[in-house]
Image (cartoon, rainbow, N blue to C red; front, side, top):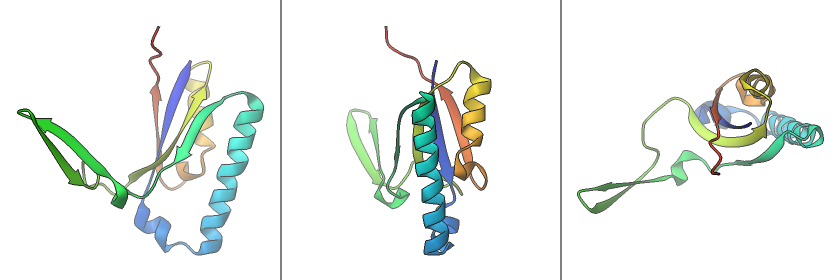
Length: 116
């Protein structure tokens, strides 16, 4: 089964880190990606631009409304994702626990409904 692992972190805390600290976390992500690929679990994933690049679109009464920024103000923002193949939720949780930002952010796990 495929699972979407949504990666959330506090952007202000991330920005306050030194360049060396950010580079170390990036290296962890690259190592994790290679490991998941070697294991045959990785189906996709990407880093996202910061929330300041976000546009939210809503259609209300036939009118399209676009606003800058994410839908809601939160401490943690969506910063990336992985799509992984896992036997079950327990395996998906074990993979999520390996994501570097699980230590200081959160990882949301969602089963993917594949179209038939």
